[in-house]
Image (cartoon, rainbow, N blue to C red):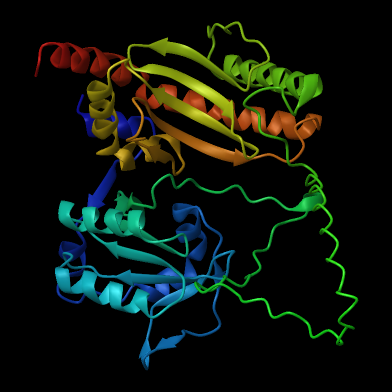
Length: 389
């Protein structure tokens, strides 16, 4: 029985990746209207909230491809080209960005050569946090005879970039509000004019300023969870109950799963193998992370395994059913393939159940899609590296 017949027997289709130029021919359309109508997809891909603009701003009388602003009021500028990237494109992108005090610059193209990736990474490393550069590879996929759907893959992002967690005090929905970005030059304080004082009575020194008040914690925002220093026993207890619920959800989805022993830490690792292990963890800024932690105790082999999986990220994400965060972590031995979810009040039983089910589903889908490949490929890569290959 052929693979196609076997797939059809289960009511499944085959995902096909299309060549942009072959699909459209010489009549390549302008995709900016599509980007403008699908800001939610671009926002999810980049991990930032984008507020649409009512009109395109102009710089030097030339319309810029600006779709909106991020939560800090920075323009989100998109340059989309469906032909191979060239040095002139990169130069024009930098000219447009240099006309703005701050910006999020997104360059979308079918493929980025290594030198263009290095240039954007170099810009991210040497510019301040007012400007961020992203490179997004644009592709087309379809299943059977369905309409083609654009797919966005981030291949360059600011160093240590991670999708931020959005939260709002009081549990209300978060709406990004542009805030002014400080200018480069420092503000100069101008002293208030005082009435003249007699020579024999010099003015007394000003009293010391009162200490700034401690910021009140945002409701629903847990403290850093690297230890129990600020969380206390109650925070650890909540985490422990959450992990219990999460493992119960994993066992329901994966019969025969053996729940590991775990304590009151801020993370749990399980189903370990030569590739590393699956893990669910609380991050310091109040989110839950779930996915695969790649650590083969050997840096070269670990990075090769990550790169091997990253080269097929579209197929992996299609199998898992969501856009993942691919974190190579070049400054560490390990790498991660994970997803993040914000939490507000984990002590709430309903939210605890929802977030536990989300983490369990994420891990189980990754297991179904990758577990066999992870274990076999890790063994091969380890033997090659140990053999000097």
